[in-house]
Length: 252
Image 1 (cartoon, rainbow, N blue to C red):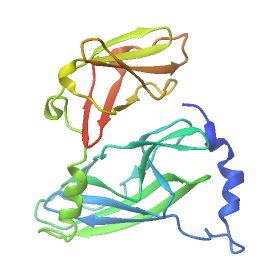
Image 2 (image 1 turned 90 degrees about the vertical axis):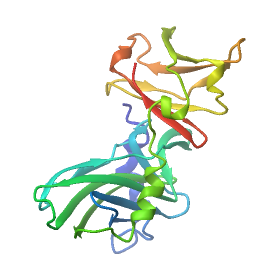
Image 3 (image 1 turned 180 degrees about the vertical axis):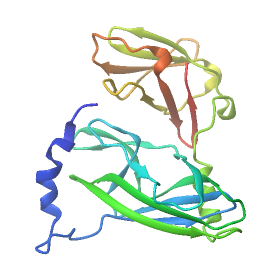
């Protein structure tokens, strides 16, 4: 992953500070919220123009990091990610969210039927004209029963990509050619304005796909990658396809 805009975070971030050394306006508010049994959410509300990163943040971004080690009666927690969007700041691609987003959480208790206390240290970046690193310490004690944010969490859980079959898609044909990764979908896919995000080894970066209509009505997505001289191993990649409100995750 390239350094990109984060190379200047420390310097440019000072532009957002007031005389007291704090942010002149809080760009994001974060909280933990309780949902149905075994479910919670990490809720972000961003000020207009600000963006929050997906787990694969894009060119030069920093992925969010979550530390749950201070929690009580917690056996494990899984973070789910709604389908992201591609955005741009100063010609640099970012992958993430704007406005409001909830990352749904599925957790397991050591002792069923007993309260669970989630304690989270979250480290993440938010961007507008510049990018700022944030650190939030959040706590939520969950008692048995359904919480007040159940509907909100489920609304965003509905946006978490499923598999290809659930999206009405078949696995694409994959190939590498001249520094590009090509994914060919047949005409039955009926893709309209797809974008695709690739996760793989940290040393690779995959750019925005070029859409190449095929003679049979299908569509090929051509993604440039770097380093171009070192083709990636296809079996080590994970793909997230987003086409309007339809999305899917898959691996070769």
